[in-house]
Image 1 (cartoon, rainbow, N blue to C red):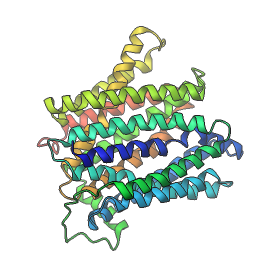
Image 2: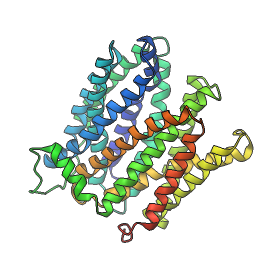
Image 3: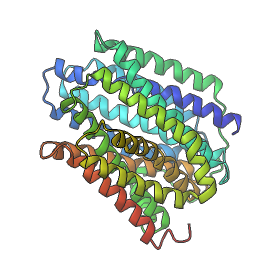
Image 4: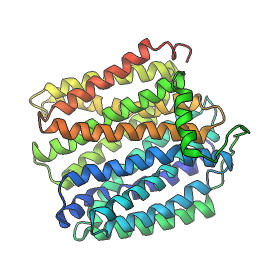
Amino acid sequence: MSKKVSHIIIIMFFMTVLSNMAHPVTPELVVSLNMPSLMYGIMFAAMSIASFTMSPIWGSLSDKYKTRKLFLYFPTVGYGLAQIGFGFSTTPIMIIIFRILGGGFASSIFTNSIAYIIDETDNKTRSKAIAYYTAITGFGMSLGYLVGGYIGANDYHNAFIFQAIGLFIHAAIIYFFLPDSNVKFNNPNNKSTHLIFQVKDDFKKYLSTALGTLLLLVLLTSFSYITYSTGINYFLKKYLNLTPLQIGYYMALTGIIGMVANTYLTPKISKKYGDKTSLKYVLLTTGITLIILSFMKNLLSPIAIIIFLVFIFVISMFKPLLQTMVSNLSKDEHGKIMGLQISANSVGMVGGSLFAGALLDIYPRMPFIMSALIFILSYLIIIFSKKLKKY
C-alpha cells in the first residue's frame, strides 16, 4: 500500500475510536433525563436520516472541489461540537438537533475517507486496501466502546468531553499532516447548485444498472447486520445477563476476529476467487451459520462456539468486498458514489434497528432468524441478477 493509504487508514482508526466513545454512556444520558426508551430509536433515526441526506452531497462537493482533506478535517470539528452539545443536552429537542448535526458531519468523514482510498488505489490494490481499512476501523469501533465505557463510568459527561477534545486534536492532525489525495474527477456536467435534487436524480440514474443492484445489496446487508447487532446487544443483556463491561469485551473480541479476517482472509480470497464470487459465498455462509445459531438452545456448547467463530469471521468480510465492488463501478465520481453507498447503508441502519426492536418483543431470537434470511436473500440476488453477470 502507498503511504497515503496507510496514513488515511491510521487516521480513520483513531476516528472510529473517538466516534464510538459515546455509545456505552448514551443510555446513561437518556436514563438520567428520565426519557422513554423510545428516545433511543428516535436518536438513531435522526442521525441516520442526516447521514442519508448529506453523504452524497459531501461526496459530490469533494469531487467538485477536488479535495478530500477539506471534507475530512472541517466536519471533524463540527462533529466534535455536535457531540459536546449532545452530551450536555437536557431536552429531547436538543438531543434530536445535535444528533442530526452529528450525523451530517460524520457522514462526510466516512464518505470521503473511502473516496480517498479509491483515489489512491487501482482495481488490483483496492480490495486489499479496503479490507485493511475495514479491519482496522472495525477494531477501532470496538476499542472506542471500551475506552468510552471506562472514561464515562463515574460521569457520562466525561466521555463526551474527552471525545470532543480528541476530535479537535484529530482535525488538527489531518490539517497539518495528511496530504490530499489525487482526485481525478472531471465532469463538467455535474451541477451542484441543487444538490438535494441531484442526489434524487443520481439514485434514479443508477437504479437500473449494476451499481443500482449493488446499492440495493448495501441496503439489505446493512439492514440485516443492524438487525443482528441490535438484537445481540439486547439478547446478551436481558437473556444472558451480561454487564455493560462484559458486552464491551464481547464487542472487542468480535472486533479482533474481524480485524484478523479482513487482514488475512479477505484479500486472499478476493485475489483468488474475485470479489463477486467471494461476496456471494460469504453472504451464504453468514446466513446459514446465523440461522443455525438462532435455533441452538445451548450457545456455550463446543459446536455452537465453532459455528459462532465461523459466523463472526464471515460477517466481518462482506462489507469490504461489497465496498470494493461498488468502488470499481464509480469511475471518477468516487466521492459521489461512496456518498450514495453510505446513504443506502443509512436507510438499512434505520430500518434494521426499528425492525429488530419490534421483533424482540415478539420472540427474542426472531431478529437473528430474519437477519439470516436477508443475508441469504442477498446471496440469491447476486446469483440471479442479470445486471451483475458481467461484473
